[in-house]
Image (tube, rainbow, N blue to C red):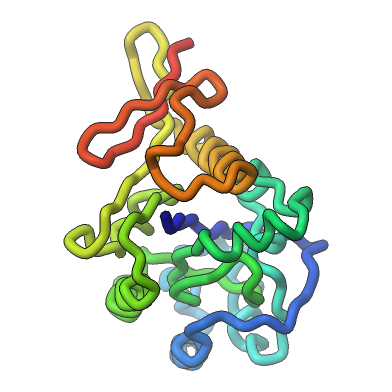
Length: 232
C-alpha cells in the first residue's frame, strides 16, 4: 500500500536542514526559473496572495538557489502534520514512513518524507502545474510497481492519480449531529494526520488493515470511498 499525503502552506521555523534532494529536482528548477520571470506586481494574482505575502513569496523564488533545504515532514506545519507529530518517531518508524508515504506537490511533484525542500508557495490551482506533473507522478508509481494507493489528501491532490492504473482509496472523516452530516475541513486534516500516525505506528500495508473504529469514527467503504463517520 502506497500512501499519499498533502503539503501545507505553513512551515516550521525550527525544522532541521538536510542535504537530501527531491527526485524531480530538475523539473522543479525549471518551474522556479519560469516563475522568476513573472513580474512582482503579478504575484498577488498569480499565487492568490494577500498583500502581506507578496514580498515573502517573491523572495522565496528569487532566492531559491541560495535557500536551505529542510526535511519535509519536519518542515510542514499544517494541521495534518501537527497531528502526525513527526518528531516523536523513532528511526524504525521514520524508515517505514519514508518507504511508504509520498507527498504530492505542485512544485516538487513527489516528495518523500525525508526529502529536503525549500520554502515556496504553489498549489494545483495553477493549471500548468497539473499538466507538468500528472504523467510524471503516475509513471513514477507505475515504475515502483504500485497497485494500491491510499489517499490521505484532499481530492485536489488525489485527482492527479489515474484510477484506471491504480486502486485508489480516498479517506474522509464525516461528523454527524442531529442527522446532519458534514466533512469539516479542519477535522479532516487533523484526523488524516492522526490516522497516518496510526498506520505508521502499526506498519499497516493494506487497506484491509485499517481500523474499523478510530477515535469514535466508524469505518464504511463504498466503491473505494473510505468514510470514517462519527455521530455526536
